[in-house]
Length: 568
Image (cartoon, rainbow, N blue to C red; front, side):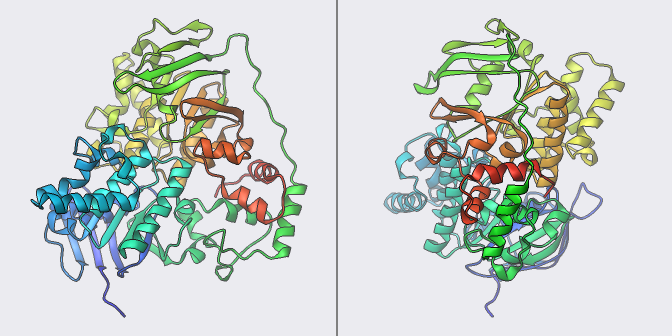
């Protein structure tokens, strides 16, 4: 057998500030040309393993190491040395950009190597061509959509022709269709370059859209499984550690169809479904009692009303929103979905006052919000931004979450109780005394959600609330938001997660190119292929399963699944 390109031997790592090791007795061999998915709940050690691979541990974040790590047969010597072997695409792409244009950013490493200009240009063009980024080489990275930023980041590591590529949650901030394209792009890159690919990602089903050689499961700092996609998707290990199984596997289980690894269940397109299996699914859908819809009664004066809203970014002339009209009633939970750059986040910024509308008006309880300041709007509407680094301003977790209460003069004993309560809900109770700097991106996201939840606002707007979250924390957060919603809090979810949209929101607002394309029940939003394409959505595997089983109206299977929903 060939020598591994990466090898962990009895490897244990403990941060200096921690009492216990974060990685424990890791034994892992990865071979040249393999494509590996690393999955596990938040805090399981995935990010720490990533930092060991790219050299941030121990060269930037020192700690106690036992055992051995070999990359290309050698012990790591420096971050710079490892960067020639392992190219890393970070989860937070904004934190990776340094150039004024996309082309400059891709060329940054080559410039530091003093590469001749002609050779540099050729390599930048080749790398950009590999990922389809040639059209925006002159564009500022900050003005690109999420999917475009992801392509530029990929080109920035491909330009150095590193033999190993590490992707840290590459799908977390992408809309469904762009996420699908990114998965395909990573697969194409491997085929064209022969690179060894390591993907760290929560969205198991989305990554398995293309071939994966092995899935490595982490929990509590240990490897608990090293198996094929066919084995892991039908095992009990995913549920045991709080990772979502593919929707089609759950739906089949509800219908009494249990598959084994030999049935190739790792991808829906390879899954062997017998005629008996298909009949069981059809019978399950036909016999499922569908709960009646409890449509929200529209009030004479809705809680929030958007009338003819329009906005153009003055510095670029980009028309972000045009003639938007909708209203929210008290106690609704509504999802806003659509492509990266469709105007979803811009809408939220207009509602909370971060931007000023060009046309139209926003009403709260029938009164215009025209004259309200940002702090005054914040008393009515809580907002959690997509990027947690743009919200956090305190070094310690407790102080960060307590900040909003302290500026409002809440007594310290009440602050302590309320902060501890939301920390527990957001799965952060054991980090109460930690510094923010010690948290992963996903954990920081939960801190910002706690920031908003602790203020108990009447309307809560969350921009990608579950991005980067494992399924257990995802469920905890969404169930908590559901409990708030049942008590009358109106929740507006801006999301790329079609699972979240289908399972928790009864209504969806579909945006595309700055326009509101559809306002409808969530189980209908993906029934129109043309609409899905315009809004950069992707049909869930439930729709494809319905087609494979001969169910003409896919919505009946979706509703049967949702009305009989159980965890995992």
